[in-house]
Amino acid sequence: MRFINISEHGEPEVMEIKEGQAPDPAKGEVLIRVCAAGVNRPDVMQRQGLYAPPPGASPILGLEVSGEVVATGNDVSAWSVADRVCALTNGGGYAEYVAVPAGQCLPVPAGLTVEEAAALPETFFTVWVNVFDRAGLKPGERFLVHGGGSGIGTTAIQMAKSMGSKVFTTAGSAEKCAACQRLGADVAVNYAEQDYVKVLKEATDGQGVDVILDMVGGDYVERNLELAAINGRIASISFLRGSRVEIDMMQILSKRLTVTGSTLRPRSAEAKAGIAQKLRTHIWPLIESGEIKPLIAARFPLADVVESHKLMESSKHIGKIILTVAD
Image (cartoon, one colour):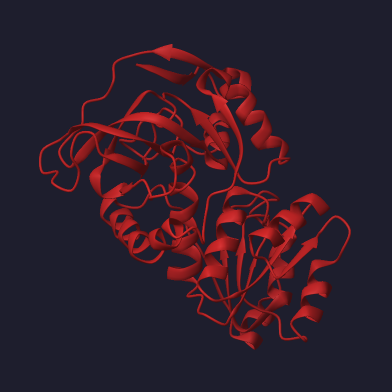
């Protein structure tokens, strides 16, 4: 099979196409012929040497794919050869074939192409775990996601809105803010021009926000505490501005805040399978009805993987970036 190899950690140019042996599905796994793979921030971090794959995972980049099941390992009954699936991988997605635990697969939703389905797993799993499982967002509550134009942001806006929340977001341009509002954001703040804490305090009549999903870190951590409502919950999933900060703990005490966070990749296959089932129950019907749809910013053939990472690092995209691997 063809796959993307990293010759050394560094800039996007360290990635190149190589040929190697396709994996065999182990017990409990399926082998997927990859149609498309999603490009995500953790891929960039792994390429840079900042995010090592967990023990036993494929060293090949790529945390989500869509395609066709071509083989199954022992003890797999949920999937059969020729099934169209999308899957959260443990690595190995930037390739023509990838072996994935069967429980981490989901059917391609009716109404989406197989290629579009590659934009679903990584962001939908991440948002569900952090916003609904860990932070416990409920209908009627106020929700803020930073970076609304990102893959995570465009997903979180749609999921939270569909589940009955009032949705706020921040983004770095008027174009991104307009796109977020088209997806369902009630208020989108251009952080390059406005103080988002001031704007959102006014928008909530001074009450603040019940749940915040943050992937920025740095100075946003203290500002999230300031903006959080009484009994608010803050979930951190990345730290683009740094993970080491100084905060005033008194805000956590006085507002009875919960500050949490998680990473998805190291979790067990059983845990990921549980998340997949929740998505299939609660979110897949909304995708199939058209209420939620992945927003794809750009598609690149596998041979142009370098350009896909350059776009990801530029943060100029709105939505997901996809690598097309096969028809």
